[in-house]
Image 1 (cartoon, rainbow, N blue to C red):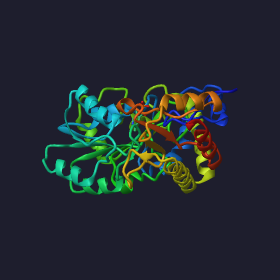
Image 2: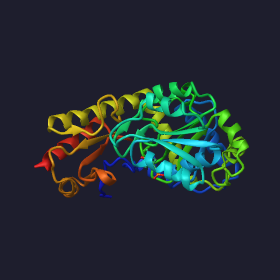
Image 3: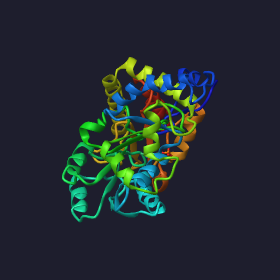
Length: 356
Ligand SMILES: Cc1ncc(COP(=O)(O)O)c(C=O)c1O
């Protein structure tokens, strides 16, 4: 089947092997077969999350869990760290949930830095922080380890980290870093179709959740915990997607987790070389660039939609033309998921041909 291959930063190309896993016959979600399926994938999910805590499967996109984290954890006031479209939106979501919320806002293209986090938290009054590790809209990766270091000074403040576009492409060891909620979505580096999110919750975050009366039902962390203890989910899960996840975990562990991280770094470097060779600049500063996508500054003022149209017509693939207010001013090339040296090198050759 011919199709337009996606080199956008999610959803990304999904393999035929993964699609085939979707076609397994249906099973009941309270059956022994389902429990076996969840129990079979759970230890590998814990390894990827770097946690001994339960890992939950949510039949939603990432925003379900992002909103759920606010509903479950914020009793006093949340600090939303904002540096791009998705992290900015989290403040709006916090307020829509009726929570007291404040922000650190940096210019799009800049990372969240430890000093800024420390300064804001020292004002006091916060009980939760939200952070996006890899801001997909700007291609900026904030320094997770250093930010987690700052959090250690504020033991009563919980940290929620979105690894939607970095999970499984980079190490994000939840327990070692002291992260309280780590969440991701299916359609980025996991190279699954959209519609499923994964997350894990620390013991102290469960304790906090138990004190919050307005957790709702669908994303109630304590419901997830109770059900996972019996290898189940609170409501009917997206079973076909879970079969696909099992297939993907087979792929990830056959490749090796470290090899997977190395591959993402290597492919990202190929794209970076192409950017420099063609006289473009990076939107993100050195040291804070994403390893799963490249947000290219359109300093040459090329016609980005025309470039993408030529790519589509000549090579049946697309890159992204810039997110929101960055449309046309940037373009984004994804190297996440199942891409290889060959596929990324081919894309870069095609881009050379289409630049004109
Ligand atoms: C970093 C990040 N967080 C959150 C989201 C929201 O994910 P979803 O739309 O799948 O809920 C995205 C989507 O691209 C993202 O890139």
